[in-house]
Image (tube, rainbow, N blue to C red; front, side, top):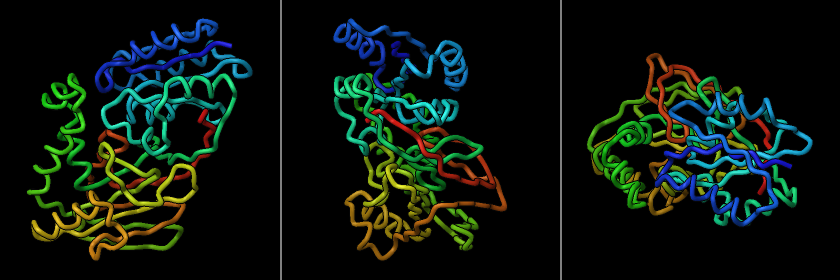
Length: 293
């Protein structure tokens, strides 16, 4: 068996190479083959290179990086093949939701062949492991992704504070998101939104709970949103999220379903697991995956 490792050396506090060293040192019996991304959007090229050598009946894949690396890798990794993941990013929301805390437990699970069924959401814009967001969260991610502040804070392992800074900054700017949502063939017109999140998992933004029952282990999407308002109304809704008062909040709205289509008359900024793009229509479909967990 060969353990193939796809690693993003620039994720978070740049610990991927140290993690690889620990794996080689602690598991000398393992043949390890390393593939490092060399820039943004390089996951596709690296996955293609791995698959040229990969023997599906014998070999295994471990992904090292942040939520964005995992999302982009799974977009190109065949759904029929299991994978393992260990976090080295800034937010690491997927790892937190799935309770991935020990490198050694992660590797041992691979060696024992223990897999669990999880679900991801596929779209033409990428694979969603945590959430896809419009409005507030997308603006925060867009501001923080390439900021000098994030690079400085990542060096001292405080990268999550970047989201706090841009969250406060974005709170003062009004959003006006207008969307037509089709959920399991039922239509909703959602106008004047400040925040909307399509959640596949429990957390986003470095540990903020999206919805208490959201989970990648169930085939059900949680859509969480609230409308624009004055500064204090926006603050009240965000504080309800931060303090986990989702279900008792009078402003936070919640829907569940399986098949999701979102449409807008104009292109809107959206974020998928820490990566941003623009779109005016998104269709999300569930895909079952097998993960060493």
